[in-house]
Each structure stands twice: as structure tokens, then as C-alpha cells.
Length: 181
Image (cartoon, rainbow, N blue to C red):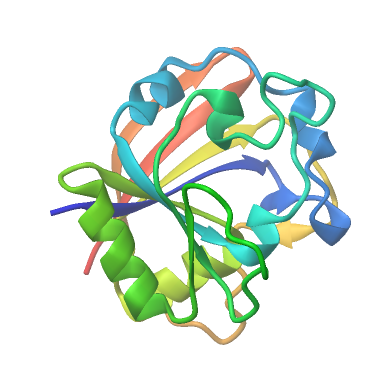
């Protein structure tokens, strides 16, 4: 059965996007990362938040990579959690109105591979619902000072994590964790 993995790049001060979801901060920090290259082949489906789906792109301006998952390195079924789907269908994208249905559909589509969660709010919802299995945080050596936090859970409870793997490349440190249920 598919596992839910939240993979995300984060500044050292805990932000995954700048103010108003700005992802341009990440552009200068993208580069080869064997951990991510290996992961991409293990992803069977994406579970994406609506803000992330329609949001800023660190590959903006690069015609080959802009608007594509993992800069075009991955292609497959995407499930966008939203209460406001677009009027026109989007090829390869299913819009789902509730978390339980979105998780079930994404897991079915992923088969034995990962469902990769994209978007801070969807990741938080998955964590709170007890369905998030793993977190891969690519820690980038920069301080953003403000923006969208990795997990924003004021008043939330203590969530125990177990380190699976730690690796590094010149431009990032990869920290892979399992959520202890």
C-alpha cells in the first residue's frame, strides 16, 4: 500500500515559501540532489494543496521546467485538494473536495509507490488526520525571515518523529523522517 510522504525544501529558519507563497527564494538553491533524483522514480501520485497547485513556481521562466512537478522530472496522476475546482478540466489532475477521498484516490493511483504531498496546509491536515507516514525536508542554507512555515500548528500536540536517513549535497541537507504513529 502507498505511503504518504511530505517532501519539501525549507530555509534554516523553518519557511518553505516566502511571504504570500513566493517560491523565488528557492531558484538559486536548486541543483543536483541524488536523494531527490532517486525519490522521483518512487512517486506514484501527488496530493497537492490548491494554493500550491496554482501558486508560484521556482522554475518560473524556464520553459522546459515551469509548471511541471519536480521541474518536469516526474509525470503522473495529481490530486488537488480544493473546495473550488476550476470550471475547465486539467489533464492528469483530479480535484477532490475532502481529505479522506483525496488520500484514498491518491493512494489507489500510487499503488506500491509514494503519494508525495505538496503544500504546507495539506501536509498539516494529513499529519493531524494521522495519515502522513514520512517527511523529507531538504534544508537549504538560507534564512528567509518570514513566509509559510513547514508546519504551522499553534496549540498542536507533540508529534514524535524518527530519523530514517540524513545526507547532504553542497547546497542542502536532506533529513528524512518517519512519523511515529
